[in-house]
Amino acid sequence: MIKFDHVTKRYPGSDEALTNVSFTIEAGEMVFVTGHSGAGKSTLLKLIAAIERPTSGTVLIANQNISQLKPSAIPYMRRRFGLIFQDHKLLYDRNCFENVILPLHINDITGLDAAKRVRAALDKVGLLHKEKAMPITLSGGEQQRLAIARAVVSRPSILIADEPTGNLDASYAAEIMNIFQAFHQVGVTVIVATHDALGMSASHNRVLHLDHGQLKPTDFIQNGNFTA
Amino acid sequence: MINWLNQHAQAIKLVLTRMHYNKLSTFMISLVIAVAMCVPGVFYMGVDHLSKLSNHMQDETEISLFLKLDASPNVASEIDAALAKNTAIKQYHLVTKDQAWKDLKAKAESNKIDNEVSQLTKNPLPDAFFIQAKSADPAALETLKNELQGIPGVDQAVLNAEWAKRLSSILALGTKIILFIAALLALALLVIIGNTVRMQILTQKEEIIVSKLIGATTSFIRTPFLYAGMIYGLFGGILAIVILTLIVQLYNQSVTQLSNLYSSDFSLPWFNIPLYIAIIISSILIGWLGSYLSVTRSIAAIKID
Image 1 (cartoon, rainbow over the protein chains, first blue to last red):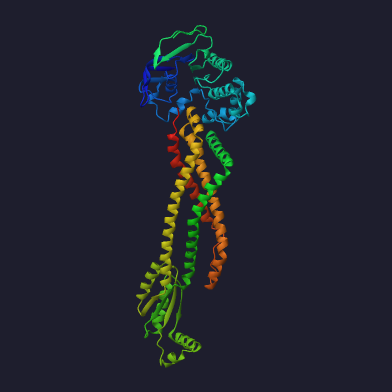
Image 2 (image 1 turned 180 degrees about the horizontal axis):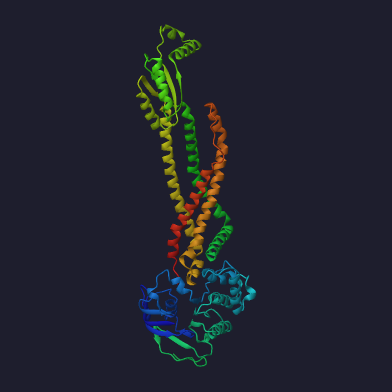
């Protein structure tokens, strides 16, 4: 599904953000990307989502080399992903319903069908009763759940979340992680970058641990205890 | 197809909603477009109606065909036949030398210059045909004149087309000036609309970034801004027509007075449908082009990270 082969990413005028990273993520896996801040977690996710291109090495998504994608093909590649960010990236000039429907409009889905899917997505994250509310009136946890609803409404096969619990307290964070677990259980590939172990729920998930841009061997997390 | 229409309907709805929230700035940009469209519009109306006036003057663009003094009535009737066959001639009439002599004497008496005329012992006037051409075009008149000059028995063909010539060249110059002004103003509009759309893109930056992140194509992001440019053009065009109609209404009185002095019924009509359609279409086109030129670059300049 996702394959990194000796990937190095260097931003102009700075050190290497990622050095010689190789790994494979199979369809339906749930993977955590961990590491201190600045270790290259965000860069890794951006490479998967075709927001950045590798300086060297190859990134294969569903057997397509993203370095060789034409600019016009990138939007269609991105539609495979549901992206979730630490800062939500919600649009504050429209209500919850209109925020969630945006990916459907991009996919040419409109009308009743779209409305049904928006409500289903809002229901999954427990925000159905807030569809008319403006995002600014929601709490931090609710905003993040709204962002998740927007990410999943077009039923992507891969969910990518960059520090989704970074700004949330423990109970909200656990709630968010449970939502990701639920998607994982219905077969969605879930990739979550997080700098705290707290966000990782007690389950057998693979961890990609980054240290100064290099992938360090890790064990599977066992009951919330992981060693790097 | 339905999806495609739906997407465009969504885009237009989005643009109109945004404009609804920014009524004042929408009105301002429409007003700028309207004023810029008005200036060549007013000039055009002036020149257009002067051309119509010049068509009125067709009656006065006469060719006078003077026969030789010793021409016999036979020659006159031959020429008459030749003129009747000429397709470039609208109408003509013959004034014989006796008739002209009588007229001259009558006119001289009424103007009390009979001294000079009565000193003439014999009729100095030739037979003459007065010809109205079908065309008011100076070149066509010149050709016709030269043709008539060649008929045997004709002494002289005189073209009274000086006015037509002058007016025609002034009108040609006027048309060129209108084109220049229109081109310059169109250029200014392109820049103004491009800049307005660029500012809008900057205010919608968040939305564009999010759209790009969730897989929107460039054309999906661009479409609303192109519609915004076109709708500005449409509003500007309509406003330009309103202003033009007002101008025409205000100035018609003075124009009517002026043309009354020249005993003409010349006045500017209130509605000039082809001009209005041209104004609306060109302002929509300029709006589209202005935003197209700026939108592609501005969207590409927004980086997602």
